[in-house]
Length: 624
Image (cartoon, rainbow, N blue to C red; front, side, top):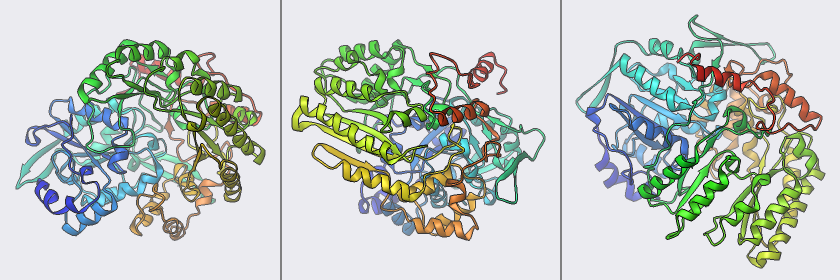
């Protein structure tokens, strides 16, 4: 069933930003629905402008649509006005290109990047006419899979998904689609897609669980101690491995070049290419730095050729060189030099969204001389060197001041600085250091740029995450966080400084969900049933819905967020193997308490364990 006419004529004229829901953007892929064997809907549980800025979804969209006999389309969470209009009209959630109801797809794959989007997943399934609970869906319903950083602790979502892809999805998703293709038949009748299974969904999931990187939560049972901590996570069938190892791509596959160009402005409205994956810095608070190991980079020539194709295929005048730490690429200076020299008329704006302060050299800054400057972003994280040593942020105050001098003196007017509060061992004096640093950077800017100087300061709250050396720590107490935020609000007033901070109301929820166990599924479900959705949006977040849902489930969010764990406690995610040894994380945690820094992995290998796993992948020893 194609619902295009009804949507276009009756609904879209009544909602804000209707281009969010029209599809048919430049470079969107067109395939004949009736001529493909497997239809995949790639879903992002946030609005179009956010989801269209996600490079991971673009990569999977490109890879799947290059496969013969496979179709991939996109769908995003409709904003409140659109959802209400759809429900009134009885229109189910549909994909953007063909405007087919999601229930007609074979597979729906959610990109799970942020815990506060979890209720949007349930809402999208419900709007599609599907039960959010996996146990209530039949063999005729689409297979619901999840991928992304949140799957490294997917336990709070276990009730809602058929399977999760843990790790990098480029290869494993194709393997899953191929297995699905071999085991299931799709036929069409009366404009409704039906599925006739050669094997049951349960049998399919048992087979899929053998693929490296695939986690099927229904095939595992969680046992708890009387105090509510996890006793063990046990496989229910003998052929399922006890620990699920993340999937690693040996070599980064070709980057997408025919990026879909939106009709409206998105969060990151520019071309993008991933120039490297993984990070060697070892910041102890950063989950991405541990779960995306090891570091792999694209060759300079490949990046240059890809950027040329992106510009030609999209018309973008800005391209972002994406990485966890873009300036750590071994060829970053010749790469930027080639890009700035090769695009003169019109000039190409090159964005480096993840800059290390200590690696942003004066020479690199000079390459942008005379170009359109898009602003620079640096993460210093803490206001004192003592705390930066605790979190292993190997930059200094002098690094920041020298970099600010280089940037402002060469024409930049806007710099953005990221800091955190609530870090381990942090005191008010450490937070006062943020105010002092910001004012010193502003003084440098004023000396070079006068009143044009702009300094944007963004403050996040430290949330302990799984698979980091701080995974055992508690979230800072609310009173302490509020005191530190107020100190900064007062101290960072003044011309040229814009200060923004994370809503403290959502911090406790994020901390609970990020390190929660499987019992939190009932909390998420109850909160959604009560009306929770778009919890990442300040204007829609209703904390009361969540605290009532916790209470009704007999659970306490502080048990998950503000309880320090023993080093020998079984953690809800211990059955997931990211390739980094738990013993190494404990060693790093203990070094942090002593204020000891660890070197960049490129300078000295700390034997975290990932290289041994990566070599197994390269040798073909890992089961596919």
